[in-house]
Length: 141
Image (cartoon, rainbow, N blue to C red; front, side):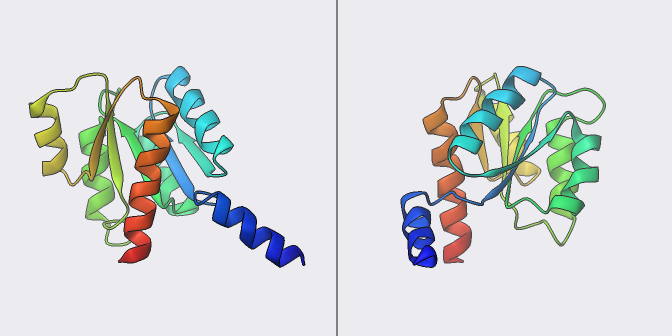
């Protein structure tokens, strides 16, 4: 009976249990993303910058990573490139976060292997839709 109930719950909530990492030097952005993702049933790993993230990625093995472009020490492009160079994580979707919606930023993100670009401030809907798109794509592969 309990497993039937759990199956129904997971059918209603397709993002339940999905491990998502959010890398952003802004506490506000990290907290907003965390709240939206937790409400959707995701497991959330937070990192303040690229170095913090790289230390946590191997331990937590997120299924999807959001990374801010403008961060101190190691920016989003460098962080994405390092993640994608690791054979274990090269298929993990990396979504760039930026307050700028420029063609150059999108192109540069693609060059380092990012899978998508999300403009800040994002809405709960746009964040969860992005997660759902990539999780379903990975499941179909």
